[in-house]
Image (tube, rainbow, N blue to C red; front, side):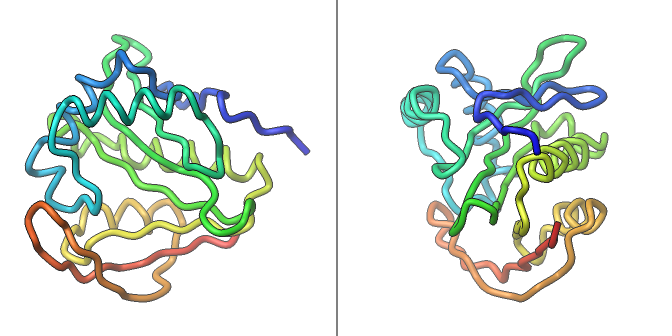
Amino acid sequence: MKMCKENENIVTERLTIRNVVQEDAAAIYEIWSNPNNQKYMGDPVSSLDEVIEICKNKEENHQFKDGLLRVAVLKESQEIIGTCCFGAWEEPDRWGCGYSIKENCWHQGFATEILKGILDFARECNVKIFEASCAHENEASGHVLRKCGLIFDHKSTFKQPMLNVVYEEDNYVLYI
């Protein structure tokens, strides 16, 4: 079995998915502060300073148990086109994830490519259960999760605190 390392890059056909560094904060803030991305975020950010602090903390502490924050970088141009967070939830072999893609990169297969890369990495790390969720009305994300092999498990709700909106949430699972 492969020994998984928190600082190991995930390489896909078009992307390198790597741990964040503080210098990524402006690009991340551009993605996370976009109202169309922020709409379904359960933990939205309110300022660039907040993102700088998140990047600083994650750069100093890359551990599966705390959730790895990664950026998806186009191999060709080195442009950051998305973010993802994944790692252990309740047990070391039970992971979850979330992602966000730059709006001008939507509908180009990047979310699917990111999630498939994370799932391949999770398999190599001997993860047994992989979970993800999205707002029920976020049909694009639900499609990505199903396309990557996750199956609907149950419904719940989550609150988007900045908008003060409670969304119905679809929870998905993959038994690896």
